[in-house]
Amino acid sequence: MKNNKPHFVLVHGAWHGGWVWKEVAEALRYQGYSVSCPTQTGLGERKHLLSSTITIDTFIEDVINHIIFNDLDNIILVGHSFAGSTISGVADRLKDRINRLIYFDAIILSNGQSPFDIAPDSVVKERIALAEQSIDKISIAAPQPEAFGVLDIRKSLLLEKQLTPHPISTFQSRLKLENEIGNGKPLCYIFCTDPVYKSLESSREIVRKMNWPIFELHAGHNAMYTNAKETLNLLMKICN
Image (cartoon, rainbow, N blue to C red):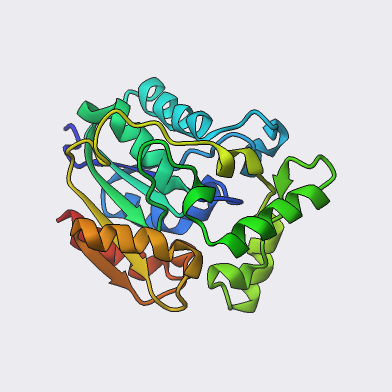
C-alpha cells in the first residue's frame, strides 16, 4: 500500500551536514514518514568540494536535484539556520512538489538580499576576518559548539568533530526569487529560545511583521541535535 504521508526533506545550516538531522530523521521514520537529509556542496561528507564558487544558488540546486532525482513530492521542506535561504529558493522553483515549509530558527531573505546584508555588522566583520585567516581565504572556520546552544559535553565533542568550514561566498551571494517567500505554500517559523541565537534576530523580526505562525522550542539553535524528541513533537504538532 502506498504511503500517503508527506516526505520530509530536512536541510542543514552553515558548517553542518545532513548528519545533524540523524536522530530526528530516525524518529520520523519510526512514525511512518519517509525522510531525506541532503548535504549541501562543500560541507559535511562533501567538504572536498569546498570552493570559492559556491553560492546560495548552488545550495538551492543541491536540494532541487535531490528532489527531482529521487522523484519526491508532497514534501515538508524544513530549513535550519542558513538553509532558510535555501528552502525559499527551492519553493520558488518547485512549488508543485511542496506541501509546506518550516523555517527552523532560520534566516529569512528577500529577493536580492545576501545573508551578510541582514547580519549584524559585528558578525559580518568577524566572519570576513576568519575567512582571511583560513588557509585558502575562502572559508569560515566553524564556531565552537556552545555558539549553537550545544552545552552537553559529549554532544559538544561529537559536534566539534563533524563541523566543517563554510564557504564565505555563500554569505556574500544574493538570493534570487521571482515570487513571494514560500511561493504561496503554507509556512511557519520555529524559534529556538534557550539560548537565543542572536544573529538571527533580524529574521525573526521580519517573520513577526509578516505575521507568520511562530512556534517556540525551549532549546538552543541546534535543537534537532540536542533535543531530538522535542523537535519531533513540534514537527508533529505543526504537520498534523
